Image (cartoon, rainbow, N blue to C red; front, top):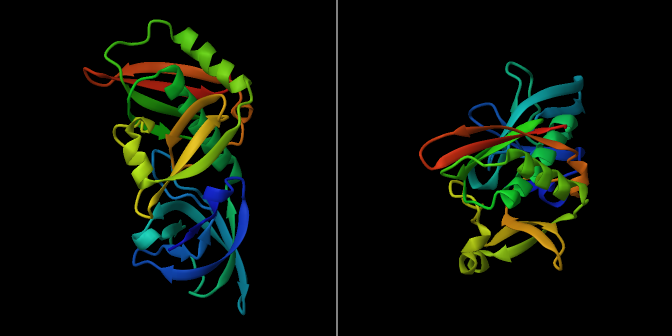
Length: 243
């Protein structure tokens, strides 16, 4: 099992690690990872590994990160490159601008689910844009009002924090789950909740295993894009970084 450093510090851009396994597909498993593995609509991280051995200094580009078996996080390297051996100590470094974009968009999408308080049937996160699919029979009457409400929440510089509950607590509070298509990550007996706002003035609270900014002001201005019809009961709403 890989220690998921990004869950406790999403701002860690670099960390030491040890190679503990090679997968049959050519992936690398580390004992601890700042790289987020694809899941919940958020793409896997990219970046590079560096190390030195008897043959000299090496740098290996990581093109994607995915989930493996038994809690492993698997880094997928650029093809046809020499790999560090099992047991090798390496330094892992994120493509930080891309990850920070994912964090800003992911947090903005949580706020979008606040200004559009409908069940979420899907979603996708990019470095500069994202979208949520809503159980929404009719398109919004005033998209500009939604954009204004979203940017008003962002500008309040709301704190983004986390806490953990048991799986039993989640089962007793099913309304915490907004997503119809993505179940909260389970298996170790506890569930991570991401809160926007404070206990006294809570704006949003929902299960999430992804990475987020520390405060909504870090998102910056957001522009709502097109609203697409994706079925009788479904509307897809896009948002973009930048006014």
